[in-house]
Image 1 (cartoon, protein in one colour):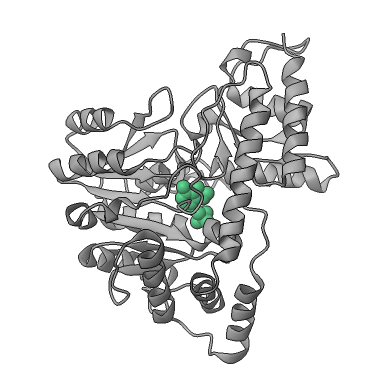
Image 2: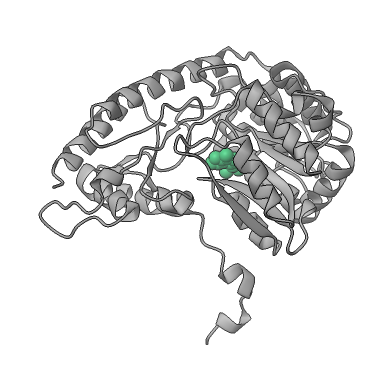
Length: 401
Ligand code: PLP
């Protein structure tokens, strides 16, 4: 039977998540015994804190595991509100300004679905983490890509020019520290972005899931810059990256009450609510001692310094120094067209394959995430493994002529 005619034409055009599909392939390869160092997916390699696990176990034993509000369990929302105030200088009312979902990705989906009509424009700085444009496509909205500059930074001038040349724009996405570049923004840049959002009467989705992984300066939430931008911003965060809880699936969005009511409507109608034990665990993660979180940040900073140093030893590989998150995104342009006594490597997709086969290091090709001739490495492995990985990359690239 041919099922094609039964499938949604819209969804059929939507690509698989590149990071999840590369990770899937690599995991299968590793299962067959291949010694691959997997730097493809942004999955922190730290164990979940014992008090967080205990909270989940206690919840399973002691409380009825029933539906919670589609906004999320109220105790968790109170904890998230406390965390926003403590870590981001942001006040959100837990009653009606915070919506918990099964992961930051789902929070972004809920917000994009709540905001965009077919044909509405959403500006997505490029390179990007892939989900924003895919979610826009789910709603028949128009993703408008905005290329960042040669240092992979979004500039206020280019943002304003793009808004001026697209009358459909309604929403802008900002992700900082950025996946895949590690670029982050300080107060003066954020103020300029905020002015533009206000001037053109737009809504901002600010994805700050890497906020604690900020290595050069303290992370500032754009919604905390002033009251006007606060009223136009939805802040996204979650437990996945902050507390190394990717598989627990807890994320949240916070913003203006009326928007959040619609976001809760999407969330409730798609997922009902999040697993109760996971919600209780995240509550414990937010309210518990934050020292282990700071230790993870210190470790990622150390790794960042190591990978920057290792890359600087590889002739031809060029990268900016990431200011946050746990990715580095060097250009491989100088190697394009070269070969290892065989077929020349024609683009970053072939380069990523070459690194997998020759260096046994799994990566994400830049063109799948909006910038060709770049490669994303997630430094989510211990320092000794990272040094080994980049030494293997160096030998593999050294063979190219
Ligand atoms: N936002 C950014 C910038 C990300 O990089 C990711 C995941 O990689 C997410 C949101 C979504 O996190 P999760 O997949 O845990 O929902």
